[in-house]
Length: 181
Image (tube, rainbow, N blue to C red; front, side, top):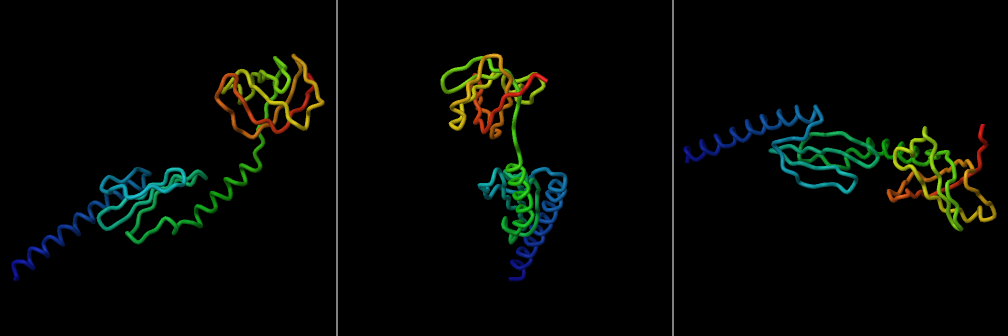
């Protein structure tokens, strides 16, 4: 009986020592924003890419949310994804505020006009020019009486999405004529 207790005790001591070594190495990696190596992937959250790992007596949560909360937490098995709601909430509120306050626009010249749409070549200095050299813009329902002509300069405001077709397409929110000045 004493021999069995010694073997069980030895196995427990070895497991504790291994747990400490594994935790120390993974803790060091986590603090350097690297993924742990002595853990297994337990779960992935449906938030943009957060991964939850289990190690020998510890848990690692590698956060990558759509709201750009990008952090790695290490703790006991009892640590939970929801324990960090307050930290994530700050990022989500800031992300939503940025999205609401964001206005995407560019200036360019109309190159072609059709019944329900027209094509705009963005100016050289416009950010959208890096994505496409020609943008297809549907005429807005509220501007049905406005007639645009080839060669006219316009400012287009859109929702930020650029469809990668050719020509590229956007969801215009507003457009207006601009002067040559």
